[in-house]
Each structure stands twice: as C-alpha cells, then as structure tokens.
Image 1 (tube, rainbow, N blue to C red):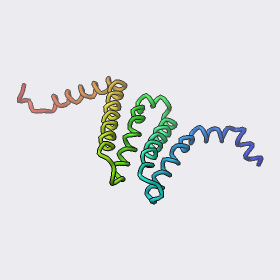
Image 2 (cartoon, rainbow, N blue to C red):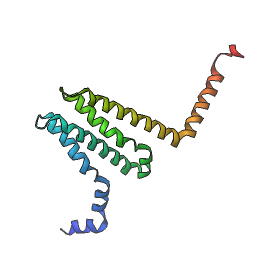
Image 3 (spheres, rainbow, N blue to C red):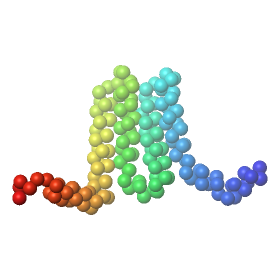
Image 4 (tube, one colour):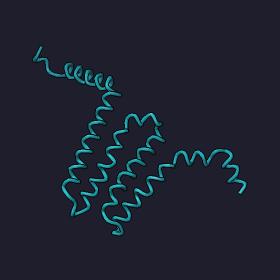
Length: 146
C-alpha cells in the first residue's frame, strides 16, 4: 500500500494515464471487431469499431510525437467513418452500394485533405526536392539536347 501511495505522489499514475488514455477508445473499437468476427454482433458494429480504432491510433500517435502533429493528421477524422463504412460494405453481404460510395467519397476527401495539408505544411521542402531531382536529371542525362 505504501508503494502505491509513493508511486502516486511521484506522479507515475498521472504519467501512465496521460499516455494510455486512448485505450478508452481502442478497447471498445477492437471489442466491436472481435464480437463481430465471433458472430455475436451484426456487421453494423464495424462502423463505430473502425472509427474508434482509428481515432485511438491517432491519439496514440499524438501522445508519442506531440500534439502539434495533429495539424498534419486531422484529416484522419474524416478517414475514420470511411474505414468503418468500408468495413461494413466489405463484411456485410447484403450491404447497399451506397455504403461503398459513401466510404469512397469520404476516403477520397480525406486523402485529398492529407495531401493538401502536407503540401501546405511541407510545401517548401517539396519544391526543393523537385528542384533537386530536376537538377540531377539534367546533370546525369545524355548531352544530346545540348
């Protein structure tokens, strides 16, 4: 008991809770998947399962690399429902084609926003990389154009 009190006073529990709180989302998300694949729940639980699992992974990523990285991965909030809907379409034989279309539209929007976010945040590096590649190709290609 004294060890637990000492660890509490030293802030060990606070550190563990502040890092592992996304488990509150990850455990139900994985549990929904497990219960569906064990044939205990209908395929509809895959939608919140996919959303919760992706969001938990995003929050773990932010815990590891800092919450400033959320400015890069925020389109994942749109990708979560896309993954959930795609899982529903994939595993529910009687699913409507509209579910697949919604999943694809959300996925394309999310991918586009990821690309735009990276271009805006890392644009100068992308331009510099393109210029380096063009310069190297000019140096190493045959001189038939000169």
